Amino acid sequence: MVSLSTTPFLPFTAKNASTRIPPPTSFSYSKQRSNRDPRKVVCACIAPPQNFKSQDSSAIHFNGSSKSEQLSTARDHEDDSDVLIECRDVYKSFGEKKILNGVSFKIKHGEAVGIIGPSGTGKSTVLKIIAGLLAPDKGEVYIRGKKRVGLVSDDDISGLRIGLVFQSAALFDSLTVRENVGFLLYEHSSMSEDQISELVTETLAAVGLKVLLYDEPTAGLDPIASTVVEDLIRSVHIKGQDARGKPGNISSYVVVTHQHSTIKRAIDRLLFLHKGKIVWEGMTHEFTTSTNPIVQQFASGSLDGPIRY
Ligand SMILES: Nc1ncnc2c1ncn2[C@@H]1O[C@H](COP(=O)(O)OP(=O)(O)OP(=O)(O)O)[C@@H](O)[C@H]1O
Image (cartoon, rainbow, N blue to C red; front, side, top):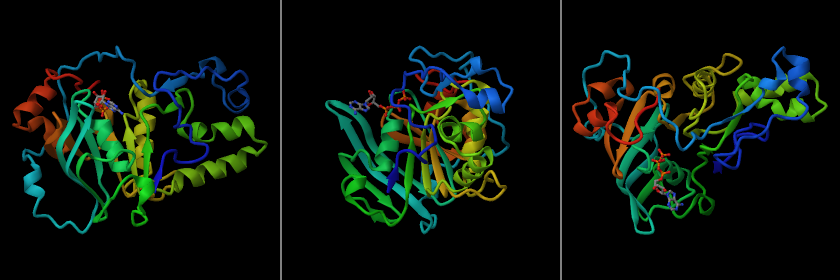
């Protein structure tokens, strides 16, 4: 099952990537329950503006000491019993435009994976194929070892619930994660603050999905708002901690991003997509030491769509 919005009141579902939702006309929650200036309540547009340019996109600097590079071939002999999602030799074209040209990778239980690569190389397309919203022209998608046939609505995929947080999501960047999650209830329900707080806690603790896919969740956010989102992404993961200090419920997640901070804070393993293929994969800290020439070009900012700081 694919869930396109994680809860009824998570505000991650703005329809248009370029839409900025105007500030609420009466923002009683801000006025009454926090000392924030209600004039600062603006909606963060998570999709980056078309003309977005980073201050410094010339290089990637990851912390880490590992000197080894883990190429995909080195993983081929590994035990596959904990693989949740596999794309095997996936092709996708839009009209004459060939986008994916034999994409293969596996996502295992417990992994926090990032997909990076130049703009327009097909990262979002990969997410949509994983989610079952797009069908590959050729190649297969396996969910827990079972081949998916058709789109997601056509097939029961062994109880694995996959959620996709679209690039066009929206948050109020002057509010905390909890305030964002409970926003509609604070504004439009007669529930008490305690009741809402309880519900927010339950929601953050039990998003109820097993795999989450995030499409540029921090694009266009300022560094503080990005950190909040990155921490939220970590907190709902089984290796993280939820709002009650307990492990989250998300088995694995995949993040498409161009943001350096998101890679550094929220991602353990990277898949580098270039010209329709995964040309490199490895742990995040291994990226900058890669000897792959395309990776080095990307890291130095000489390919389109480099990492943004
Ligand atoms: N439904 C569609 N119909 C036609 N073309 C499409 C469709 N979806 C995506 N494309 C095209 O496929 C290419 C890859 O798009 P995609 O959004 O997957 O790239 P991306 O790597 O996520 O890009 P970015 O980093 O800029 O967000 C782009 O040229 C895009 O215009």
